[in-house]
Image 1 (tube, helix red, strand yellow):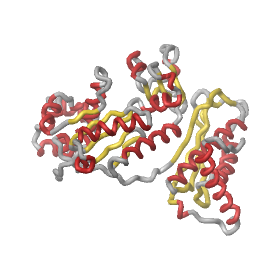
Image 2 (cartoon, one colour):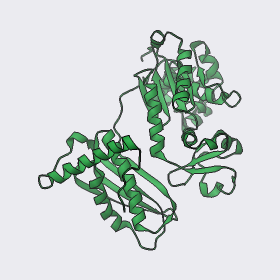
Image 3 (cartoon, one colour):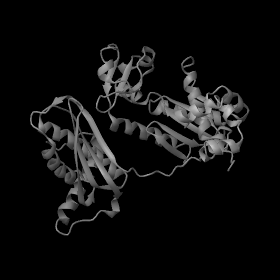
Image 4 (cartoon, helix red, strand yellow):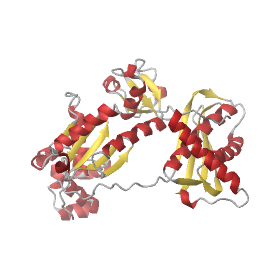
Length: 393
């Protein structure tokens, strides 16, 4: 196994969705706030104030909305959060090209060798990362730093735990001299990647701390947990087995869904909202240089029943002017008069590179025209802002 010494940091945006909402609504700063999943199903982000009140992550909204009347509950706005996320990730690239985006609000950085570049210590580099993201974007982040991804994650958890008593403590480093001490005070169940079954198995063998785990012989770990267990041991000891991977992976699908502000029976309104989801999906596809050859529309009723239908396209596309035409036919088949709906969604699947798009010999001019209109739409939004153009229901 490789024991190359690396310096790896994990940058994690604090209460990310809530923080994004507070950028638009500063009056919410200091107040208990929760962001709900796209269909207002459950809590997916909590402010520190809401956490102190006892609001649990994943709590169903219909159960807790009357229990926590002082909490402001907001419907999620994933496209907006993705925009802020991109700004954060772009800022990280100012420090190092070795950035692995782990989720919408987390990224691993390989900082190895950057002390000479920035003429300062690694601790000062991560402090600067925290400051620049806060000053330029307005988002608070926590940064954990060590010699492997697993230790960087542990360090990040430590930074967040310290913030409960030291709000200004945004960074934490686990150096070589502190590894043993940290592992002794860390339950194996608290280690990133260790699930309930593994925890239960290790507990049966009287292994409860991370240090007790790494103290086991390799032969025993390999026999009982396998290669993954050996890799985990090395990562916990500060040997980077899983390097930061900055190569981006193309998504397998892109979807958009959002609850209506009020329950709906109006088909024209539902189509209008669907058109909006299709535009956002197409814009992401164009940004990723992708096209779709299979689409799905789904409706969610008031009582959370889901009806969906998908179709395959003859030629891949990423223009909303084509996909909206297809979606109208799908919606005609799904929509039922008199049924009350709470949300509509759209999903683009079977994604292929944009350069593999083929233009029909029978409708080539019209297809090219639609593609050019879509590109013009993107340019207008870049210049004048979102919502400058809409396709009606």
